[in-house]
Length: 145
Image (cartoon, rainbow, N blue to C red):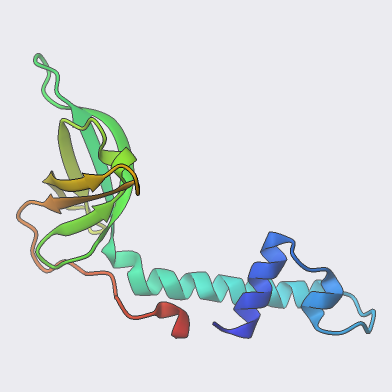
């Protein structure tokens, strides 16, 4: 991981004093260095969004209502893990869902089905119906870029 990103994470967590973050005890103002660290953090976040942003989906769920059809009862997020529509999300997102819907970044909205879930790890896999050409989350270690 980039040294600036590591120092930024330390800064954000309050784990180090200004001098430790600056790498010296010269007594100079820490404000310019703090801005450099925040800029490095911002670049790191932008890099991650560029890498995985198109793989992130919105997952909405409804509970059946006999008179009105499915109602939206909650919303969460997921990430596409396979080009044929498999999406990793959280168990608490799909818990007690009667109807699942996946909303892609391009505005497409499709129904989905629950494939499996593991409440102990709070993970679930759903599959979006009739999905083509999905952007799958990269599996290489993005912290190395």
